[in-house]
Length: 578
Image 1: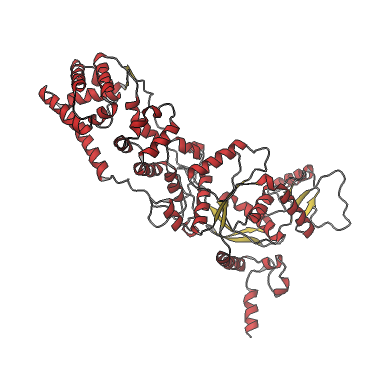
Image 2: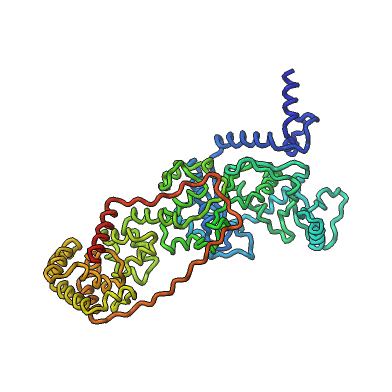
C-alpha cells in the first residue's frame, strides 16, 4: 500500500526532465511526458544545497573585449569577487575574445586596468578564450559522436526563406531541425560545408533551474531551437565556448546580468548533452538610469575609467555598486571587508536598481574625508600631471587637505577648491568678485593689507594671522569685512572660498602681497562665464521598474564635529564681513 501511495504521488508530479536524461525505466507510464517543472525545481534545490557542501566555490568574470569596462560589468565582477571571497573560494577571470570582428586588444588592457583600479583582484592567470578553440572543437566532435549534436546542411537561402515564412505567420523563427533525424543512408548535398547544431529537448516541457537571484526560471523547450555550436568555417560559437570554458575552469557559480537568461537554457543543453555537472546560475537585474531605462551614456559616466577620471575613489564605487541590488539590513556605508563577510545572493533583489549620482557623490565625499592626504595627492598628480606636482608640498599638508576635503564630493572638485592657490598672476576674477575691487575704498584697503602682510613678522599660521589682521582693522577704524571682501576677491578671484586667514596662509606671503597690489591697481582680468542654460522640463519615463526590495536611501551625510566647527567659523566670518 505504501508503494501504491508513493507512485500515486509521483504520478501527480512533473517528471519529463528525468526521461530526457535516460531514466524512463524508473517512471510509471501514467506520468505525463509534457510535465517537468515541480520536481525539477525541487531536485535542483536539493542538488544546489548538496553541491554547496561538496564543491569548493569558483566564480568567474568573463567580459568580451569590445570596449571599456561598463559600470554594470564592474558590479558583476564585484559580486563574483565578494561571493568567492565570502565562501573562501576562487575568483577567476576570462577574456571572451573569439569574435575576431569585434575584438579590440586595447579594450583588454582597459578591462584589466579597470579591474585593478576597482580593487577586485582575480586568482591565477587570465584565461584567453581564443587559446581554447582546439578544445571547443574537440567537444563539438564528442557531441557529434555521442548523438548530442548533428551536422546541418541548410543554406543561407533556405534559412532566410524559413525566417520570412515565420514573419508572414507572425511567429518567432525557430530552426525546425531539418537534418536532426536523418538516417544512416543520408547523403550530404554536394558543395555545402555544414554547421554543427546541438540537440535541444524537442518535447513540450520546459528547461528550468533555480536561479540564485530570480528564483525558479522555466523556459519552454519549444522556444529553444537547435542552435549552432560550430560554424561552417570550423570556429566555435559563444554558446559552446562559454560552457566548455566554464566546465574546464571548474566554475561552480555563474553570476551575471539578467540579459543572459535567454542564453542559460541553451547552455544547459550543452552541459546536459556532455553529461557535465551544472553550475549554479544567478542573474542580476540590469542597472537603470533615473528615467527607468537601461543605464547608458546619456545618463552620464558609464565606464570605470570615466569614474576614475571624474575623481571617484574605488572604495566609494565598490560600496555603491554593492548596494545596487544587494543589501545588508540598513547598512549603507561599509568596507569591502564587511561586504565580504556579509555577502550572500539571498540579499539580492530581483528589481532593477536605479543609478543615483547624488547618492554616489555623498558616499564619495565620505571616503574623501576618510582618505590620507598623501594618497589623495598621488591620485591628483596622476589626474593633473601638469599642475598638481608644482604644488605637491601644499597638497600633502594635512591642514590644507582638511580645508579642501570639506568642499569636495569628487577629486575634481577637490582640485578645483585648490585652484585659487595654484593660480598664476595676474588673477582672472569672476565678474561678481570684480565688483568688490571696484571702489576706491576697496583699493585703499587692499594696499593697507598688503603693506601689513609684507611687514608681518609673526608665525605664519591661520591662527596667528587672524588676530593680527583684526587688530589692523580696529586701528584703522574699519570693519573686518571692509578688508576681507576685497581681499578675498583679489586673492582667489571669487567671492566664495575657505576662510580668509586660511587663504592668506596657504597662498603664501609673497604671492599674497603681489595679488593684493594687483587688485588695488587693477592688474587682473575678468573671467568670462558661460551663460547658464535653462534646464528642460523632466519628461516622465514611459515605464519605470522599481526594485522589489528597494535600497534604503542615504541620509544627508552627517558632519563631523571638526567639520561643523570649521564651517560655522567660516560662516561667522562671512556674516561679520557683510
